Length: 248
Image 1: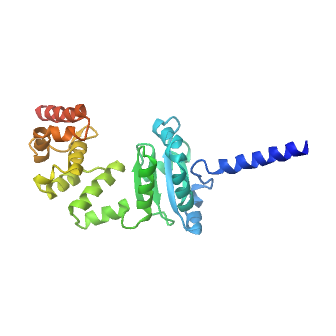
Image 2 (image 1 turned 90 degrees about the vertical axis):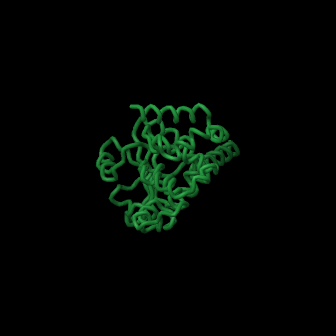
């Protein structure tokens, strides 16, 4: 009997130990004490905005949040805090950070300054990359916004900035135009630019490259190039959508 109890105890301890790090750990302190804790532990802050019944949130929780590399990195480097944006005090906090689409992830330093923002579903690799960007003073979205306002219009910078704005749901058609204007037309055929034109000629049902623009004309005249990398029907759909928008 004593042997059985020892075995059961060992199994329970082993299970308990393995269950500790099965997802990102979210702090149970009050929001008001969050930044003091982060400052004390010399960590950043990750705010996770969600709501009950949010399908995209459930997807993140069931996949990316359970990736071991994500768990280890976030638990080591951030005080993580979840906020139900449609319930109780979460409504007020959500309003303060102006969140509208969920899930939203906002990264801040220990003083409460926003560094980086992401909106939507992300795989583990991309989630980790952007979390690292948040901790890198040169790679954070806030720093890119500052550099852009100071006049940085280098092609590589604008290219990266476009995707950062997209992931934060803050995409500006002006930045798309500036990037495509910063490269030569013979550079359109590079794979990264084919994918860029495809994604940003039409975004969130808004036309970003008008019918007469060189990027759209390149798309129409070189569909075969786009077919090599992208779903053919989706390429055609973008062309038809922009044509209809022009006619209307």
